[in-house]
Image 1 (cartoon, one colour):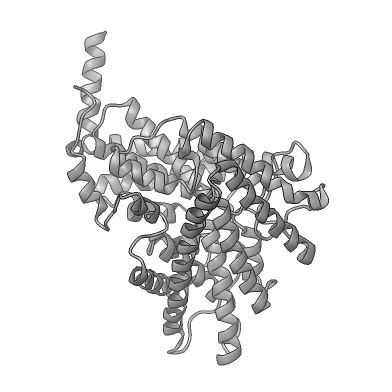
Image 2 (cartoon, rainbow, N blue to C red):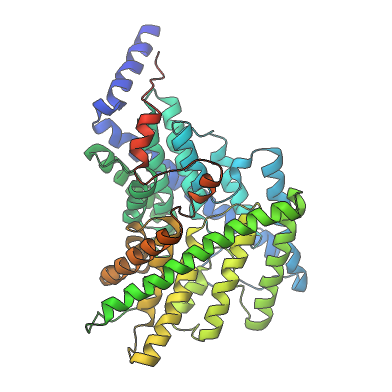
Length: 471
């Protein structure tokens, strides 16, 4: 029996080593995708449950972020709801593990570059819980970052159970990251591009195929559970016309690149400054979330909506459909979203960066679109500018200059906007790199002394030569 098990381990190792790529890798990618998709479904219902408990005092698993939130039962006391969530999250961070703090993707990248892609399995449980507490209590962040870290933990767990090299484990971590974002956004192509572009850019045929299988499998699971959904409202947009249209999106990219640089700096400054003046982690995060609670209540008092909760998908759809059209209010929402997200994540909360970047990009793009409509007479192009603004803001801030426009296309079901969205994203990415070489994911690692260059996968192979666990 022992000889049979040893022989099986050796066979698996030979199949899963870089030299032994084959259909077995496709099977592992599918398993990572299926587990990640199932986890994303549970994560969705956990957020819904906690949101309803925090805001309505009811035990319900229904919560649609694409619709306006029901007013909280507590009146002005809703200001303290984010504070309670902050207290619970800080307990997890301080007494269990600090790995559940922040956006999640930075931690995955650190494990890839310093520990061969090894991630503790317990993170797959604690990270969704911490993020659900943050978002359910009114924090301003997305669910995609923790979903990516959950998927990465699934890939790392597969590498722990089966004998394989570090590079193959890292690849499965990348499969999990792509599957996580694909499951949350119903965007298999965008998730695949993101994993290949940002996490592990290894373009060998079997790794490309297995990553795509992972994202498709995860999307299939969430579609089975939630239906064939689109995160954002579908709004028809006019085709490009006129010689000045495409260069206009390069100008939009310049604005998006500047905005992404300012957002990265604001998030970093908030985290550093709060630690200096409020060294106690409980006081720091709870004070920040008190400010977020005041912002939520103030917006609700003036407008009747909690525009800043979670990923603000409802607010993005309102922008795309033209229901939010006052230029001054769009600018105000853009600023408040950046501030609320920086307070939520920078002071110790748990949540993603991707969705807040989408919101800020939509508000910024719509504002530019209103100016173009008023000055140049380009009527009906405001949703197009908003969508391209999303691509530019996400591409520049996260470094996903190709996957961002692809993902926006999938989120909005507007496939003909790909060209202007890519122009916006590429221009924004280039301008952000002029001011800051690091993305919003790599900048915290750079501050810790870990500098990740563009060709990080090649560097990873040199730093961490393949090590078999079957010795």
